[in-house]
Length: 113
Image (cartoon, rainbow, N blue to C red; front, top):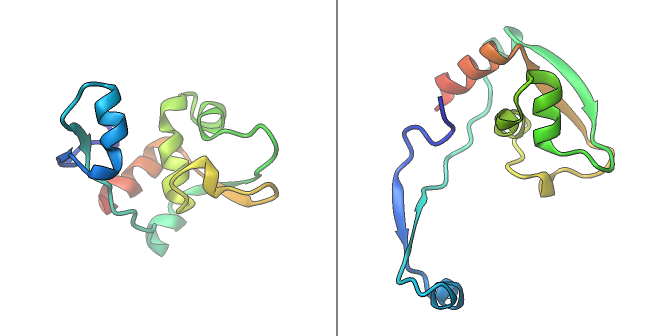
């Protein structure tokens, strides 16, 4: 399962990217559409074990995914659960939640997707 499953590929020819496109000698860039991030329902949340973590200097989503899931590629699952799509949205001292076990967290995501 990939976080890109079911997402449309869109062609980006925006003028705001003209410098990038020109520097790479491209006319457009194909990219995945931006997903809508849904929240976990109360019922799905109750089926999960939630581990609390305080965001500290040096934290990275991929490191947390590796620590709790044994696979850094599931970083996006932690981002989704916390409704913060990138590491830039986390501030030092933020209390974040790691949904576990991985299989149930993925099942909750797949119901939302």
